[in-house]
Image 1: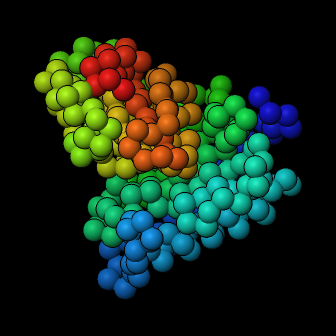
Image 2: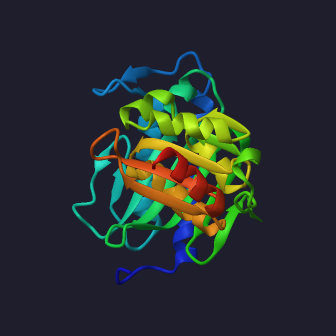
Image 3: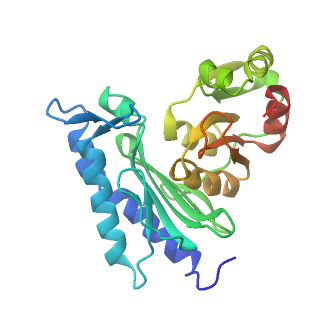
Length: 263
């Protein structure tokens, strides 16, 4: 692990406060007809609330700790300069749903050790439901101060599984795996961004499979799910170069699911 890492509990407290810092502004713009909506170069949706939210979170992080760690963020890019320790920030994960009035969006913050490739602390803050999911290495996983855990061991025939779209499985040449999994599980649902990740950490979903994530999308989930007693598998994406595919949840169920889909 990298040298000069602050106490994890201290870092986790900073991450929680950072994730909540822009919450009031993000909620004020939610379902607001005056919200400015644009398209990025890749065709994805971005709003004025995304941009202002990240600006506020970055400013708060730079002033909240004696050592201002650099930030890798969704809207303002990579300002880490190759630093080993960094913050990852996504002010509104699930922006498309946010613009359609879906309450499943959230703010993601993690403290990442780039040398080990592991997040040391992570937060998924869901403003619409006033829930904050958080975890630090060795500290457990929590929702609003209550301990959480992934789903108990079940056979696939009893499992609720969330997956990316069939189109993503086709791009990854894993469509047969999608069909095999769908035949085995009790119910298969589509992903709804970080809300789905939080629901896996609290045990509502047994397993989640998702493709083409950025580091800021998966870093908080990684530590939260693992500290909640689960397993998180992250690998270079088969769908989009430079991104990551991930599968996570109860370790026993996850093993069965990834074997079926060929993950």
